[in-house]
Image (cartoon, rainbow, N blue to C red; front, side, top):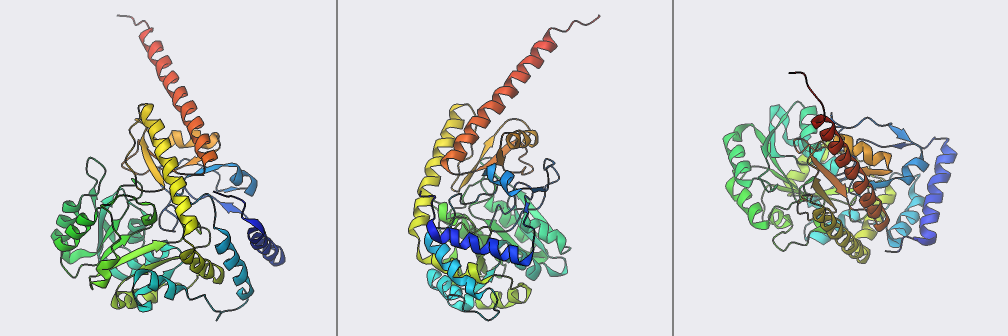
Length: 415
């Protein structure tokens, strides 16, 4: 993958720096709990078990890390996207600017009408909007645990709650369990949440299982299907659930430009749903999407060749890294995303901090999977740094355990 983005990238970044200088703002880097922005665009909440860290770091410190914590595209937007965003900077001082036809392009991609599309500042905003719209009067969201926690956290913030079902032993989502929970609490449920593929496990819900869920719950029950990692899936048993929208089912599909399109910092996502559901949600959107990312999003939808390259490199690196960890005796959960989880057989919190000390950022804890470490797939150099750090950390842990055992066995006690 060519990491030299040419003149367009330099001009774009130069424009940003100039704007910051003119406005007299002091740029800073705020690293939220190491899962920040880890799902469909939104920042994940700070876990109570998150290791203590400096809340702000200099750009130089941030740039020096191998960033394997937030499931981002490490290669950045392609030239076509950078050029589109650079072009759109001329609208920075306008409100009613041309937006490149972003809604129309999304609608065309999915074979729906523009009235079936709702934009958000990352799909994280859309997830919040769904919660605000459908969790009124104490309604609850039904989903598995762990999954993308922003949905459940937002439910709490609007004085609602989540009814969660544990994952199956193989870390797949329990579809019969979700159906049972929804039917049992039907009058109290505002919507069902399905992250597919699931974050943090990387496992898919097959197209057969999605149908099983939709056919097994009351036909008027809203189902939110989060497809943030859709573009990385290779499994033929998986399929997008957009066709259910076309069938008229009360299904809301969310997508993001934060992952495969490499626009995490620019904030753009969307929902695809029926006109009626979109109309219910629209009043709760903020309308804070900027001009540049709308044009960048259009370019990303049209120029998909770079995304195919990113997918291939990412899946190759994922396969290589997972195989190496497996050969070392660690269990790795099968993944269809740009991240994976490895079972360390010990609490991950101190391990996360050890990685940080070695210049590698990895995923936050995901209770109740407190011994599993989530690792995003970075570029080849970042994955090499991860492998080196992993071996050093685990070797030190094994030695410490052996020394502790030897010390214990050698201790004499008075009888």
